[in-house]
Image 1 (tube, rainbow, N blue to C red):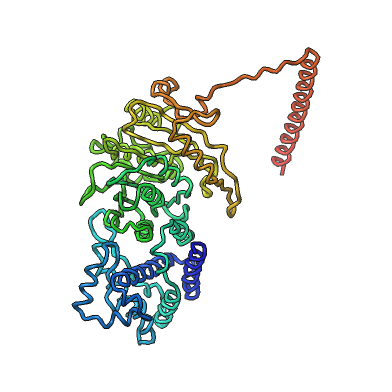
Image 2: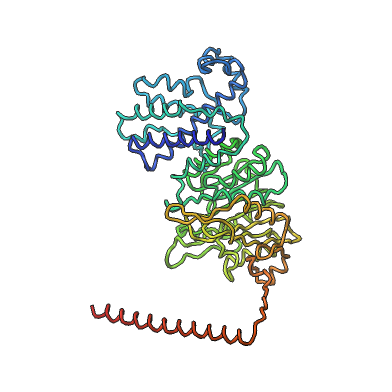
Length: 539
């Protein structure tokens, strides 16, 4: 059933994209809004239907529940709405998808369509609105027909959207307990979450890394905890963490500068039964204006982050370098390079912000470029010193290359734990794991379920495995100039092989011959290069 439903849901997404393409919106900048918002409206409509049928068996037995609901008095209907669970959207009877479907032949249908979505958004503002860091609320839906330039085509466009939605239902899946929405959400946003588009690029964390981070952070059951991502993107890391803890046992908090990411994160929370955390989504710049208002805690129990590694923040770099930020950015602010401002290491600011935001016994997992774990000077070294001297390092897992298909940067995951005062730091080199596949023009490394489990199990059991993991004290790390690279702590083994004097001479002669051949080849190449340079200079 899961496989069939996943295929049907992907087909619905493809149908919506086909409608957009037919009306000139394929790959348009607004296409993702139409697709994700139409998908969200359908989900809320079906969730509402599921809940009212559960509350009144007569509705469940009716051939057309919408018509049976229309026979309710206003008083009966209002009582029904009051009984709905907190995470369910409230819909008036004229706001259902069925009502739109039955009125699609009315003049100016696009206005009815837009008004319906707008009214649903207003009616559910307190439940589903994302906030900007200024406190202003961003409601659920835009007027989708506005994205069609020709007014004469707007009715047909909205009718086409409704007809695609009405032939599909989420209702049969709400009683199931399995995590299929991660796959659905990834498919839904795959064309709208590229990491090359714009000043603040969005990086989608591979599902395997997200699961490993969550499994290491939460090895045992916890409850009533706060979870935070300071650059949440579409929320992959938070979703994995919430699934590991239990959706009803945690409250999520997130901030991201991207309006697109914040909207998609809201959808992700709806799909993953985390509606109660939507009021804690903040659209804003975490580095410049970290949100601290409302019901937000001062410090967090769990923090996850895959921060951008290299982005230009030179426009406001100087304002960060002030006394007001001295406590938060204790190791300093990256300097503006002479060339390639986009190479500014903004991730170093995120690490420092996370350290500052951790609660007294807080835990964190942060994706970092692997170069961070061995840098011999600068902000990187100061941060590592603070993590060791402050006894809040839990460990590091160095991942295989190409674990992110879209970037060649090797990454590691840095684990912090303020309660890890005794030590037992686990450093792991998982770089040799995984299978490399081709994804478009890029190579991508995939970890198997067994490899994911091996990383998690070894880390959580504090196991030292030859050429894979070591377990160290804080003092041992200090002795290696605060290096977090597992390889620098592996035991170097020298294997002695006994050979006869004759075998020794033969090997030596063989090496000498090969070295001579290499020298000859080098001289030939040098002559060829010099000849080419002379030819080019004479042309």
